[in-house]
Image 1 (spheres, one colour):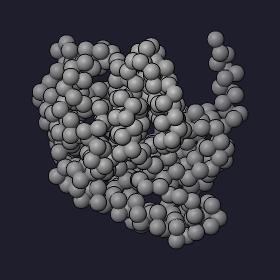
Image 2 (image 1 turned 180 degrees about the horizontal axis):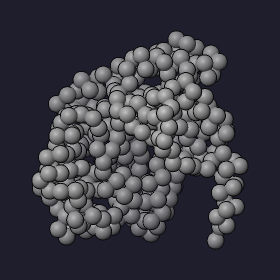
Image 3 (image 1 turned 90 degrees about the vertical axis):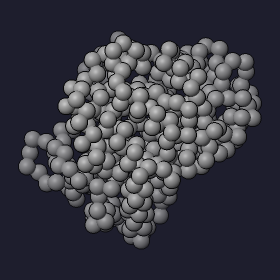
Image 4 (image 1 turned 45 degrees about the vertical axis):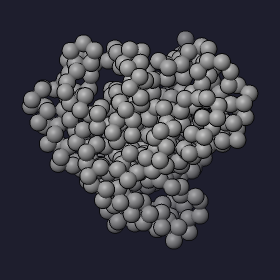
Length: 387
């Protein structure tokens, strides 16, 4: 067993020791370090992209369900924890994602772990992008299937692996449509063609795309028009949808299979009805109010333009997630502290969340932030980089 004290001291020395930072959430994209009277900080760490966590419709839906059903579901869905709002939410998600059915989970982590481990086994092979989320990799480990990792968004490398390692048994390709730490997009149309050519299943994690992309907020899958080619469309309610939990949308047969095989669904207490009600309200809002996405994209474009006009030359990517590569963990921590002095809350992202030598500041743009806020942030970043 690892000696805990030695392990903690080693992480401290290399600049990768993590601590939970106490925060007072002040609303409208502002936070303050808890326990003090420090200044308000602009929050660039949140994934509440559309600012729906403060939307009156979500709050009202949650409050109504809270008063009607109480604070918890009381049991797993297969026991007595199934409520009408759970099934309404699943029907709404299925329609949003262009699939026949859907199943909700307690979190994105439990969804990815449960889905992959239920589907795949020792005689199967999983082809996974190297930069996929930790929950995907943990699902792969639990499945016990053979694992083939392809270079990030490198379809030539994936095709080489498919040609050499696609044997008998089930083959699954897993990607994220928007990568959470790099902010880039997966080439979904090309991936669909590859999966069809090689007889694979395709699973797409849309945690950071649902609500933000697509005419109805259905994500990159909707925007690219590939719903028919995606076998499992997974996503979360805790980011652009402003609530909590996760889902997978697929064929009815696939959902029936997961209800009977996904252990993280079978053996977990159901989402509280109030949380499910807020998520259902969010799914409806993203379809009824496309202006929310439009406003977000306008702010993202303005922020990137301000950086470019100030002399920033690195690629800022195609999404609302903008990583500023620093390199060493200690330098990233120091940069985060300097930006905090300029009124920005931007935590340093360090290994093992990202590969060694690629520590970064991850800027997440939300509708909470005004154009003046974004200009302030751009000025601070340019000052940090001495541009």
